[in-house]
Amino acid sequence: MDRKSVSVIMGSESDYDTMMCSEKILTELGIKHETLIISAHRTPERLYEYAKNVKDRGIKVIIAGAGGAAHLPGMVASLTSVPVLGVPITSAICGIDSLLSIVQMPKGTPVATLSIGKPGAQNAAIFAAKILAQNDQDVENKLTQWIERQRKSVKLKPEAH
Ligand code: RP5
Image (cartoon, rainbow, N blue to C red; front, side):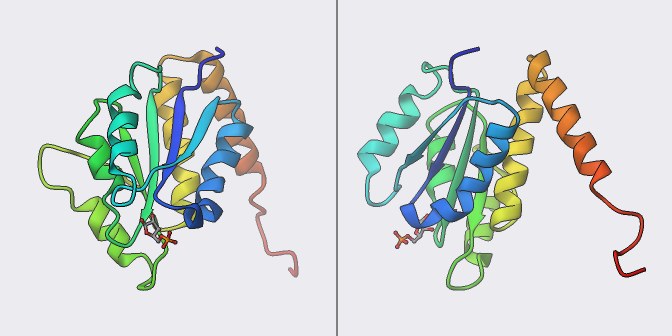
C-alpha cells in the first residue's frame, strides 16, 4: 500500500526528540507515515485544516504528542473520526501536566493516552500497528515478527551471572 496510513503530529519541534521514537518503530514495521508540527495555540488554523482533511487523505490513525497544557490531541479528536493516540511530552513538571491534560478528556471526545515520553511514543506506534493489523495482514506479520524479536532479546539472567 503506497498511501500513508499513520500521521505523527506534535505541538512543537521540541517534541520531535520524543516523537521520532514513534517514527522509528513505524519504519521498522514498514508502515508509511507522515510527520507534521501543528501547534493548537500557535497555529489553530493549521490544526483545523489538518483535522478536517486527515480522514479523506487516507490516514487511519493519528499519533499526537504534546506537552504542558497539551490540548493538541483533544482538539484534533474533536474534529475527526480518525482515532487519536496521545503521547504526553515530558515538561517542566515531568510531563504530569501533559499526561493529565490528555488523559482527562471530558466525555464524548476520547483520546487513547499512552505513557509519558519516549516509551509512550514507542507504544503509540505499536498500538497504531495493532489497529492497522486488523485489516492488513502485512502489518500483522511484521508486528508478530517484531514482538518475537523483542521476546528473544530478553535474557534469562543478567550478563554478570
Ligand atoms: C506544547 O508546548 C508543545 O507540545 C511542547 O511540548 C511545549 C513547549 O513548546 P516549545 O516552547 O518548546 O515550542 O505546545
